[in-house]
Image 1 (cartoon, rainbow, N blue to C red):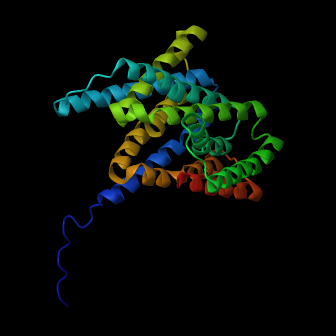
Image 2: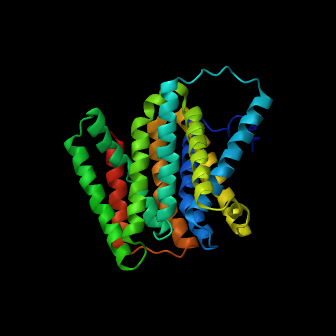
Image 3: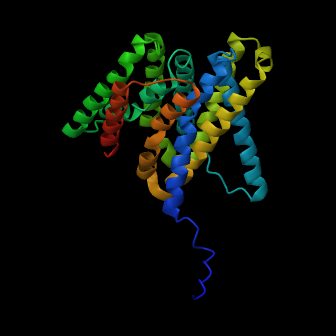
Length: 309
């Protein structure tokens, strides 16, 4: 039997497209764990504002450490100054996308199940389409109208049983919807600023703005000592949420988009709601009826049709 030729050292390496898809999938997985970790932290008595403050604080520390490491390993490239108009937009978008959207989401999660929360948040592309039509005159085709109707029928099928068996309440759902609207507004008005200053720089700046705003709110409404008197598991979940469900997914998605483009990265990331639902079923003992699973499929189909735009 002839000897098998040795494998090339480059044979097992991923192509840029394969690596991009893998990074997009890992990013979606990271984002999908957020609601589960938040619900686990709530079991230890922490409130939404305190948990979000800890999460953003850890996230900012991780960003600062990464920046320091990056500058230590290589000389920093010259940075183009941000114009005053873009600074103002960054301030508003940071408050909208990572402060208000996150705050509303964390408040809603106190009463809404992780699976339903993730599915409602998944509606943000449909709202972005509607907002783009409202503010920029972007046309909406008949196919998109059909997809929108399909999507909202699906979410109704999912939510209605949840209201009946206490998986969610109307106030909690209202907070999640408000979070989705805030994030859709953030996505609608951010592309211009991102093109001028870069996606990673924009995201890190927006996170910084939201972190500062969150600390100001905390200082005005709670004793600072509350941040250092939480049960140990709360700090663990806050750190994991900051690393696994915030900073790493943001960096991985940016790397994925650089390799396969925003469209393919978004399609690969559409698996997020299913991951959240599976995790919530296994870890949080949540449940969905067969009819709700049908609603999940309808929502994902509708959002996918809209995403093809």
